[in-house]
Length: 259
Image 1 (cartoon, rainbow, N blue to C red):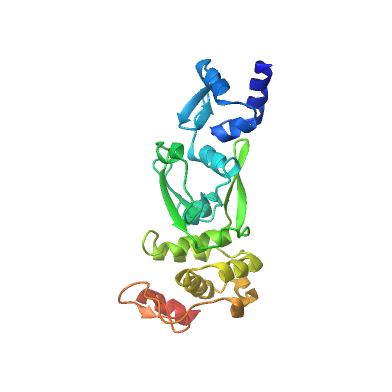
Image 2: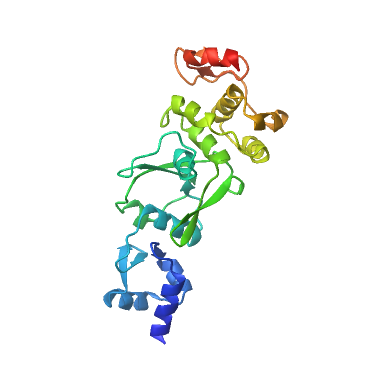
């Protein structure tokens, strides 16, 4: 009977992922039985309340899978990380010590086993209400081995990237990335712009979209978007964009005139 339980567990447990104590209990594996499996060498402890299959190498991908599917957290790869995973980032990160950007709903706590573990990347987590937590649009799935996890779509990821400019992301790189975003879905873009709480990100998004005259821009209903009031000072000693009232590098001024 216990052997059948173990077989069922291993069948339901994707290789390369974390199993939380909560999920194990849902599979009928109580603490004492999990302790026996650990003692027998079938599973290993990854931290308090988390396990991995014996001999498995766990990366942040497998940890994120558990946090999303087993714990129901909103945390997801966002911004430049999402754009990279989707093949839309201008610069590809190095494999070693790459920076991985996660966005979480404000107030959401990550489990201790995740925050205290030394992962295969530098985790940069942004806790933000950039979008309402319940907003379900602007996501896609990434397959990793035999499991999938949720990641921002290109439409959502670029707004997350712009939200981090200039404190944690490069303004110049935002321009280079945006140049390649020719196939965004205007219906999703429009809904995300309506729900986005960052005036800066929305204004910069439209500046770049119009700079490159991407065809989907004309399909967005600007009347439904709140761009706020007053000026936004993005950088010192820049020029003030006449339409979107945000300061930009003076080197962009000629491109604005040409667009």
